[in-house]
Image 1 (tube, rainbow, N blue to C red):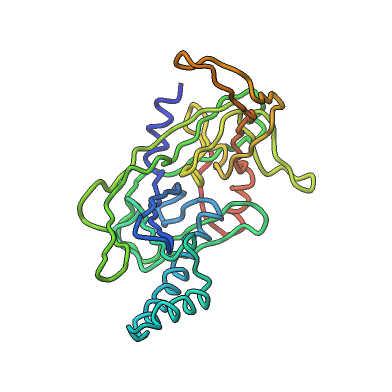
Image 2 (cartoon, rainbow, N blue to C red):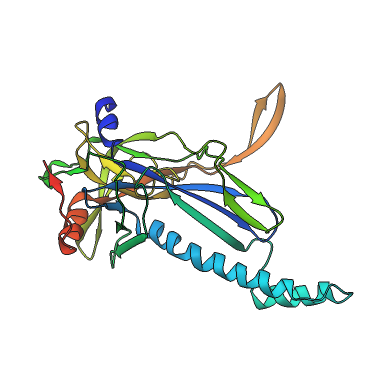
Length: 294
């Protein structure tokens, strides 16, 4: 049903790859987000929480660099551990504290001096403008639904994004106590579509802003497009909510591998939430960003 639509939307949908680590050790955690391009001027749509994560990454890493500088000045004597603990308290570092985050935009532009962002004041919606690129790595762009009344409960729509990160082009540099991107390893992750039925709409202060779907949006799909069977954009995935179904099973006896076991299960339904196309178009207009409709 969505085969041609996925091929169409994939032409302008791109992943954002992230690597991070905590103070506890050297294990690197990969993650991903999604954006999709709106026009040839380098404007793209994603979630506000994705952009905030990108913006906070530099601050997090700079703080750790300052910590490393101070740590290197500590005398290596019998008071080192005590002084190191004092430094950790100063920086509020515990084993679970995130100390480094690095991000990269995959197959977006050939180069850039940075990006400009526009954050929606109320919704989990943002615009990114790539700056000083020579070449944009796509030639097709999002086409938004013109008649927003066509999106109604019962309609099946699809989302596209990059959950389940499989890239591994990163390493821990022990000499520098740093995480780094590398030129080796797997640099990409496969795109992943997931369909869902429109169940309800989302509103705030009696103003429509979102679409609820019968299936979850997956981690890594935040900022990914929501589209119909023709590949026309109807919204953008931003979160998943979890509703308790009340079908609780407590200490039920079952037979598993020829053994009686007691199990407990609390059932939830996981519903995807997407920013409605009309909210996206209004935000683009408010920031004088051109876009296509059909």
